[in-house]
Amino acid sequence: MTITPQWKDELRARITLSSVIMRTTKLTKAGREWKACCPFHDEKSPSFTVNDQKGFYHCFGCGAHGDVIGWMIEQRGLSFIDAIKELAAEAGMEVPAPDPVAAQRAEKRASLVDVTEAAQQWFVDNLRGPEGREALEYLKRRELKPETLREFGFGYAPESKQALPTALPGFDEAMLVESGMRIATEDGTKYDRFRGRVMLPIQDARGRVIAFGGRILQDRDGVAKYLNSPDTPLFDKGRTLYNLHRAAPASRQSGRVVVVEGYMDVVALAQAGFGDAVAPLGTALTEMQLEMLWRMVEVPVLCFDGDAAGQKAAMRAIGRALPLLAPMRSLSIVRLPAGLDPDDLINRDGVGAMERLLAEPTSLLDFLWQYERDALPLESPEAKAGLKARLMAHVDTIQDRDIQALYRRELLDRFSAFAYPPRPPRARPGSASWRTGPSQSRGLSPEARSALQAITVGGQRSDLLDAVLAGFLRHPGEIERHAEALSSLARLDPKAAPAIESLIELSETLDSRGETAISHPQGYPAPPVDIRYAFLRDGIPPGEAREELAEAVSLLVEKPALEDAMAATIARFDEDPEGSIAEQIRLRQQLTTVDERLKAFGRRKAAPAAGTE
Image (cartoon, rainbow, N blue to C red; front, side):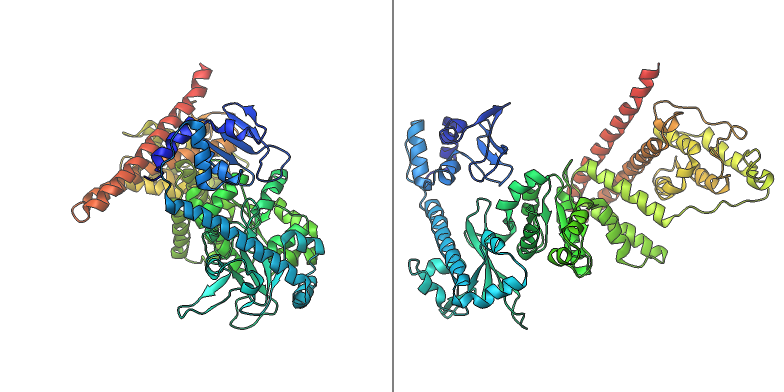
């Protein structure tokens, strides 16, 4: 018999997690949970929580997480089997025969840590010995202080291919290979992975050495400047952030975590007083690494070089982050001057220059807009359409529907302002501005009166559409900003098309210099005021009116667009039944979300009306 998941669930159910943790850690009740200073790393304010209902502990500082079995292994230092036996005795359960594979895996991981810890001490000793003299001079030329070298555990791997087995005779060849310290070729040859390099230990969230990074002393063609350990049972580069165990406590003091490109950038920042920096390990930020960052702060700061490569690295990270965005969970970006890394900037302009950059990062949305706007020349309508397509492709990856809608509206607003800049007013015979001049009465021209009549008379339209049309009559300066969205709505909703076409035509013929150019007191009468909507009420701040009007337009356009897409998906059912059904399910979910937003919009706007009666 083996230890099954069901048996472990029963064991966890019989043991109160907090009672076990209390034996070695002082817990304080906090609502339904318990809190304490984390036993896995030094801290002054509690970030360690215990939840008996869910059966797990979690540290928001270092990321330590587990159940009662994990606690016995990680905090008490027991093997998996010993932890199970002790807990089962307490719970009055009989221990089945353990799963030999799982037990062997846990023991192997613990023994591999012994290998990497021993190798780290050997590397450190080498740096202080005769073989490490050149490496130590290299580090001094990089202006690294002795205390920095000690804090980060700098060492040196000698040039020899067979030095490690002699230095670590207590570990067999298989363990040295499995830990990533040695390489085994197909013909049976084995040799040291790291040779002639300055070495840095890579540590997990608890500070244990699990891997290494090495840098050559002199750049040579065909030789990688930086070399990291491969993935091993100890080390998964996609789930590890360099310097996390130091940065997590520091970030609780600063309220910030800074992500840089490499571990030498982390070291340079730490030496300058920025202890809250981490780095991925040779790859773009992964989804798991982003989750680790968000456990520390709501908006981590990405700090990349200002050159093209650095900006592409930032965009790769943003591409990974967009689907994962959630309320109060985003990214911000700092662009370093082109050609400078953090160390260069600090050496050239001082610590203050870095502080100023980190104090005013660019938001994710701003960076996305600026990057795509500047990516290609925008000298033709086709190029501008390409910009819009790229922006909307990014928006479509966002899974949170509220955030997706907000990004879509904001980016479309920016695109419209960029692609359709305001035109200078055109004076024509018969128009108010041509007839009377700016200082005289500004009534509407006959053309404007005719167009306005088409709008105000209306037809079989929704209440929200009528309110939006009336809103544009009160705020004509917004018409051009939303011209593209309105044109899209006219294509999708035939009932709305005549009024929208008249509205856009009117926007080109009215006297745009008047404060209320369409509904001027001496022109055509203003449409009735519907006090449910801010954009139709007097005395509302212009910014609030514009924002609500933009939200209403977005809702009006989104629903018929989804309905149109649904019709197209149903039409191709015979060609691709499975794909059509999957797409229909997705679109129905989106339509349900839009309907809920429309209802919420109406209820939200009804509240002021009720209060005025």
